[in-house]
Image (cartoon, rainbow, N blue to C red; front, side, top):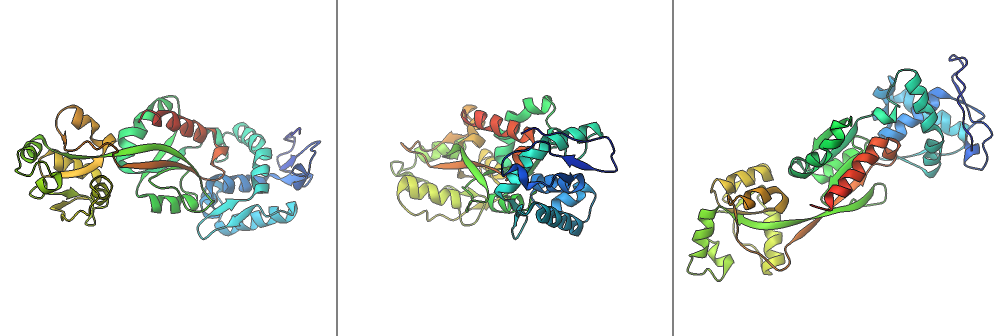
Length: 327
């Protein structure tokens, strides 16, 4: 297929799809309105009518009306409306492949703009601790090379809901998303370790019941980020084959705070190895137990449909997958 842009008279604002062949190419009228196509591409890339509106300087009802007009002209449904955001249909993916490069070239000639995919910031989200310890250091070379990055931290479920509404391009999730609306691939397996300060570790080793680690830990305070002890309970169930009966002595807002409290001598906890590796290597924390098969949690890299129209999203995705092989 050969595609060309007519720029002779900007007031006409038409995109001429010349000598197109095949059923997918014929979905466009012979002279498609550039405004409609720009609106389409903004919705495709942002994931929702609401998110596209400020990028285009339009109201949300206007964006909705323009998409309906384009759908009427093409005779195809371009987006499946979701409770929050939209999901591109197969005809929308094909249309985006046809028009993205010409529209981005036009945007560059006109001085950039929200449709210039090569300069759009990449919106990345994930757990705060992982972002700080692993992700941002891995992406630093890309930032030095001109990548624009907008990072959000949070829990997996709210972040995935925000992605469905078009707010994120990539999310690092602690579980695989349900359904087929979001594409995901395994990124890395995160190992969990049972740790305490060296002082507490020596006390546990000298305990009369040191041969039974669960019994030796009964007198050691447990530090966690939630009252229901999700990580510690899973460790006990997976490694020791029994239910954790201890109650938290200290609860704090996040895993960084858990690490800080345990490092200061507040007690013991179960933490991601990536978070406390530096402390273990320096001897500031001690690993209380080394199971044959440590508990693992698989991290997933989730990508919003249409996000690959921005080449920088692909750069970030590929960089993370490469870096994660060494995590």
